[in-house]
Length: 269
Image (cartoon, rainbow, N blue to C red; front, side, top):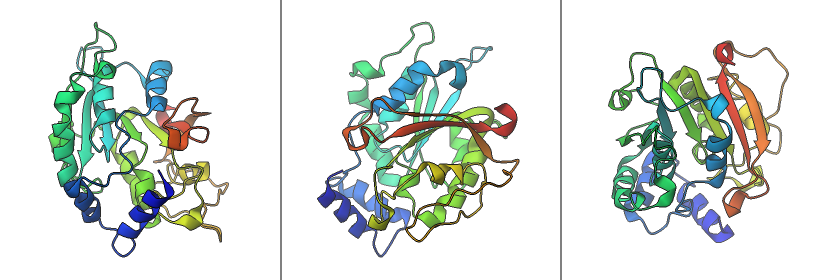
């Protein structure tokens, strides 16, 4: 993201950080600096190389596992998960959902969204309007009881949230992830200084390390605005990191700094 665009985005949220401010940008449609037009190559590489960890798209009974992309934008990643065989759900605020649906005809023509395995086929794509922190949208995703999602992907969602929402983010992730599911975090922006504010807000590995194992708990910050890593017993309801690596490929804005981490419930790790 160019510096001028980053500052313009920061100014847009300076006095009002409510979700409605994102909806205003989607409704206008002329200023969407986070929209890269394609899935992040790091996600493609992860889905290609980490099948043994993430698991197949088809269950033994032939039904499809479910993937969730909160803050999905126009749905590039949602269509990608469907290409790998998952029933894929994108969650967004009002006008973003309409933008995602309008992208469908173009997605149907792109090679990157063709079925990756003809024997598995493509999963369905659905876009749901709702507040990530509420529960009323979950029925639209056809969840069975407390089954949750088998895969959840976060790239530019956490970093779009003001820091005071981070504990709620970690709590919701643990609630929405199925018992044997995998949370894929594409850690971004690791290059940014916390003093620059957001969105996007600066991330570090410690941000994830002190949020996901401790759902709903407020992390401590140093004088520069970075999360302090502390050694303490994890919450039994939290997630544990099972892998982390430097992304060989990513969008240009994060190339060279982006990392990918995989998280599971402790009992499934």
